[in-house]
Length: 53
Image (cartoon, rainbow, N blue to C red):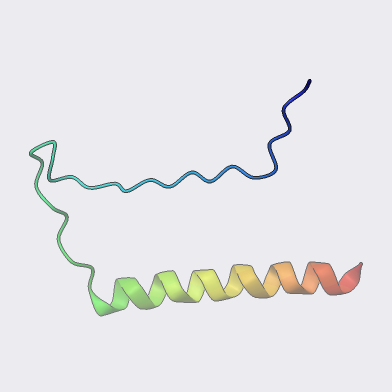
C-alpha cells in the first residue's frame, strides 16, 4: 500500500550565536529604504507580468 504525503512543513531558525560569531551591525535607515524600494520594484514587475497574461 503506497503512502501519500499531502504536506511537508520545514522550518529553520538561523542564528549566529551558537557558532560564536559576532552579530552583524544593524542596518542604517538608508540601507533599509534601499531594500524596501528594491522589493517594491520587483513586486510591481511581477504584478505587471501577471496582468499581461
